[in-house]
Length: 296
Image (tube, rainbow, N blue to C red):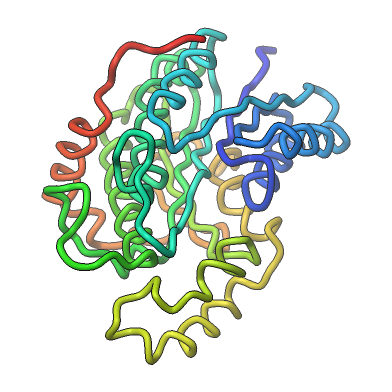
């Protein structure tokens, strides 16, 4: 039997690590991607402790850099077929930041990075078919400005809304990609973890300046409600991603959003608008052109 392989970005801690553990327990040879080698080594040790059939490995990459994404794709793609890609990487920033490419960081990390990695790994995923792509989404898409003619919408920078906008772009891309790849053997899913007690919820979310001024007076109440729904363990929040990547009931299906209870849910309506998907496509191709794969 051919070895099944899985790649999980931001897989060295939190929801990403729990996703990697679930995939390893399901029999996949798992590669986790992250920035910190020490955290990567600890993650590999944990994965190997629960599933020794295929040794796990860590690959270092700063996924805010498009060149780093291209190098990662070049290395993974050269190794042959890929069965599962889980784009788990995500970040929210209290203050506006630019990446090394000069792109606003929330859009780069939450959308352009998984977009570019996915597009560059499509040959490996086609070779590994039946295979699956799982893009992690968020309920924050409901806070997004739905304007994608530029990397940033007009107005001041508010981290929570900018995070939601980037996740909306990625969800629109995910649903369009599912349509593109229908019939190829590559299925595409979005997974909403709902939330967990992570660095994002315990840190960034407590800063009131991440929301627009009109929401700040209500933010403590909104945040507490949000925290109650994100206080569970990361292992619970990883269930939608693991389900999307492995569950047999999804065989032959594509374009499905898996909700926090690890069950299919209706997609956020704005993400299904073909005008949004087309605007996201144009912006993505302009900011992250599909240049030839890079190798070390």
